[in-house]
Image (cartoon, rainbow, N blue to C red):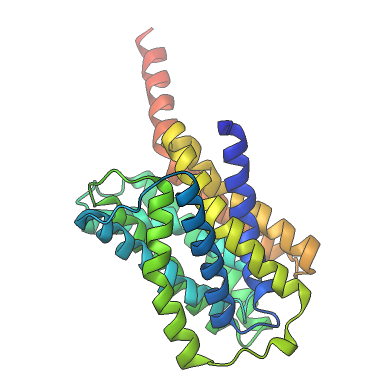
Length: 302
């Protein structure tokens, strides 16, 4: 697969995931929708591994990766599906835009990475200001928005924590092995959650849009998107891959407004732009300012 095509696949899949979550749980209970989605992804993933003759790595470190990945895939994803009952797909995407920044904060604690520079601290304030604008407006309009933002915040924290913990494990895994292994570890959690919180199928109430959304999420969001992401991670520079997190909220918001008639307002636009700006400063701010300082010092020396 060409790298440019893989990059486009990641952007499209990640951008449509929030909308897919909303649609798939419209007429199917969130826990059952998630269980079906991940069951489809795991089944096709195992089939693909057999066809490609890829063995599931069961070493100790590999099992750690599967377990740490399941923190986001199981518990974190459950909270995302709960949030979809209260807030729009665009708001979910904007909230997830904070993931790289939160991951950086957690990496300081768990991986002993360098503390944030002044530039990165500023980027955090900009992104939080944007999120505050979006949250405040929606909580005034929608009484249930507080639950939605609480659920999605827990989901974002768990996704960020999961990525940091996985990064701390030294093991060379095939992307498909990572994906399928993490799904297999997470499946019992989905099953228990469905049994305890719902326990019913009620297939008579299912609508075609929800059914197709579950299938799409299983095959593309949970399988193809994950594989394409690991592929570009191997082929492209980290700064280029980081563009995905900046493009996704913009595309996702646009899709929600166009395809799902989600609400658009100046506050949403302002908050969204601030979040994207904060991400841009976080990813590229230090590099831009260092180049500017070198250029300035060079002109002085001349």
